[in-house]
Amino acid sequence: MNMNQMKTIKTLLVAMTAAAVFGCSGGELTDNASPVELVANTSQNLHQLSINGGDGCEQPVGTVEFLAIPKNPTSTGDFLDVRVQRYRVSYVRTDGGTAVPASFTRSADTLVTAGGGPQSFSSFLIVQPGAYFQSPFAALQTGDGRDPVTRQPFVRMDVIIEFFGETLGGDNVKTTTRFSLDFCVSCGCF
Image (cartoon, rainbow, N blue to C red; front, side):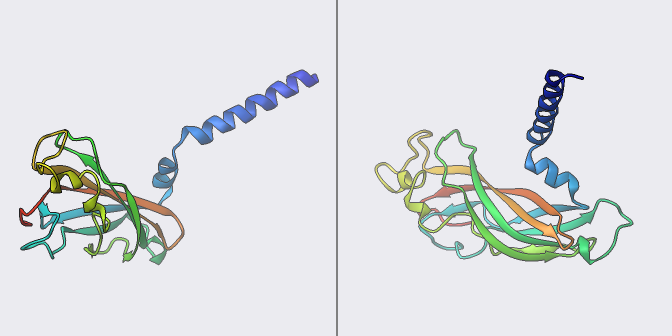
């Protein structure tokens, strides 16, 4: 084998390795490697939020119940338990509007026993402090009190919450859930 053939083979190996690494997203590598599936089920208390507060607005939007389900039903042990360490909140408009609040990440600390019962989590933010004074909510509080794109007196969107953690054995886990909410001014919370 001559030098040119060896260089060609090395180049092909590097290219194939790069394709294999970049062809898989981090989520695919993380989600498939974990010995447990983290599942989030939600119960929603509020479907409408008045951005300036009011009756009923002091309660949580809802509760997330986590289950850590071993992928191999015969697997047991504390190393399969999952510690949820942070969550990321993002938004998708469902009313035809375009502006959404900025995404954010917060820390969390919840231990979910693998194969055990549900672990409740209700102390999470869905909107950062101060976000009600920014787009898209600011338009509801000024001018004619309507969203400039939809012309509605509310903003309807899904609040998407991604939870990240790891098993006590060190494997990364992730799950996603969402709440559908209407945000409005002086409309109450229910």
